[in-house]
Image 1 (cartoon, one colour):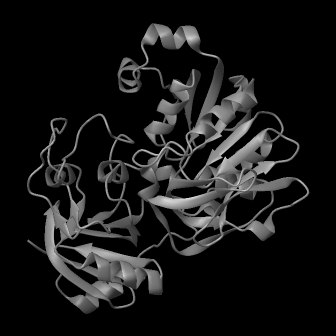
Image 2: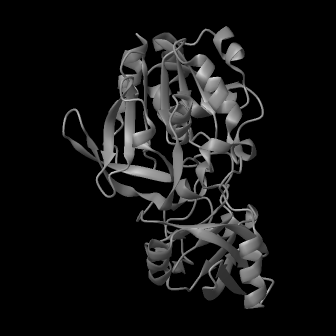
Length: 372
């Protein structure tokens, strides 16, 4: 079946569909990872976005149950140069195309993804529509222009869990290689995770670091969290504009100084807002597993996994209280910060990786050390 990707600036890409049929709207972005498409598909941070993979062949190792990063895929559409018809991996449960179809995600292949990526780099990420139903290019461009976009939209409510749960199921223990009895015996601290679209590997990493992990919905109030008597709070990753998620920002403000806090990605941005800073939208965002970040204290450079379209403004932060800890070497944007007086720190990148380099995984241990 034919498919069309139409951008709000009038640019048109024609290709063939795979996965589901229909029409989807979102901000079109590109991801520079060579592998890890399953983790990208199931990362809730991609809600509201149509994801383009720059690596030309996607789907060759299929989809498996163990590598999911959330309960379902949340992205709006998937764009590749070629979707492999053969999935040759002993762990696979199904093909990429079958997985997208089952989850009602529209994919398009056969377009020049290099051209699309270069266009986004020059013009910036923009609203788009992906359709297998409408062939009127002018009509599709107008639909893209009229679509919602990301700025000012709360997408966290679309991906957060609707109830509290403990991350200690038998399936979890099997995935992490931690036996249930050993996990209970060795737990050293209790961490509450405010779920704004948390990736499962963040929870796995906390479990590996001997934490009792409790996940709560994004709208959980500060007093409810304090009643749980946590040793620490983790503000998770998630999709969209951080400034639109006022309730999480207010909750964070009320918890500052009352419990140690670690923020990741969107959690980092909302922490920045709670500390009096400001955020802004990046031209085309950071999406991929090869972003160099410098630790300003040690001088060490880590290759990191990133997925964000917004950023905390360095100049908006109170330097008397906030120390800048990490900087992106590609564009010098803020990648990490720490409170000088309180046990609070955050990073813009993903220390849990999945999939990607593990250079930054040490940050989970730093969080645990802060709780003791």
